[in-house]
Figure 1 (spheres, one colour):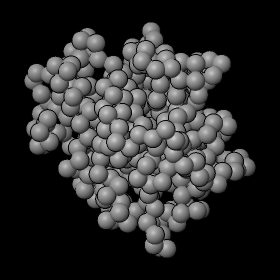
Figure 2 (cartoon, helix red, strand yellow):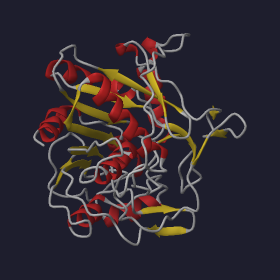
Figure 3 (tube, rainbow, N blue to C red):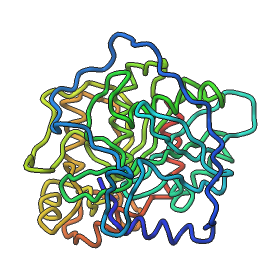
Figure 4 (tube, rainbow, N blue to C red):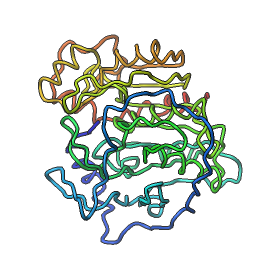
Length: 358
């Protein structure tokens, strides 16, 4: 789901001190070779609600969000604190960029992949979080993947920076370019940077959290074609990738949902555009909210019942980051949006402790 134009504006302002006329370093990580096909993998998702995959923006078919035009499938983040962006090529031949902090020690290290929200950037890991400082002090590899530029044409979402959690191909290899990209990125980290294959984690915000949940459930019990699994994930203000409102389909859901025991730690706010409960979801949608997934109460129920996952932990926060006992009684769209855009820095230690306990 989109983090609105406000996130892009905030991200730009937050990074203005690091602006440069030069592109970030393009020292490329070695391209991962596509492996030979392997039998099964996770195939327990049926019925795509879309007739085709969401398309990249290109020079011949550009897209726009009303403020900026996108002429290429991906943008290169600055990654200033870590010497510039690295890149690899996905199955579509698209250059995929990421920021990376790697400890200098020679031992195997946990890998945390951070996924930004819609309209955001891989650079948001520096401007909105303290995750890099925590990676330095705790000695884990931190990678922030840049999303693609997509022509979404879905619900109230604008074209631009998005991770694709709408195309539910969870097989390995997957035809979803973002699932394929994560498969390749993880393999690069394990082969080249001594990431511990038993300690691979994802952390996502909003739309990035939805992809983290989709990918994690696809790659927890069943490995990627490169042989890697996800141990656990954290998602902030991110609901179901499987229950969406767009086009003329107000209840877009697969006929069959995959089963997974992936350890999932979710956090959201008592007033949030990723709505707390059904009443809030309906009210905010009627007020013009851009958020297209179901509310967190319903998603938690789906995780625990339909998906049959006993390893789900959810923490509800108030605006001031205190733990909430219930959904907010009143919730304006502006307040919900502001809460959604406030990454809970004070809970990063809690998030990491959850991940590293698995």
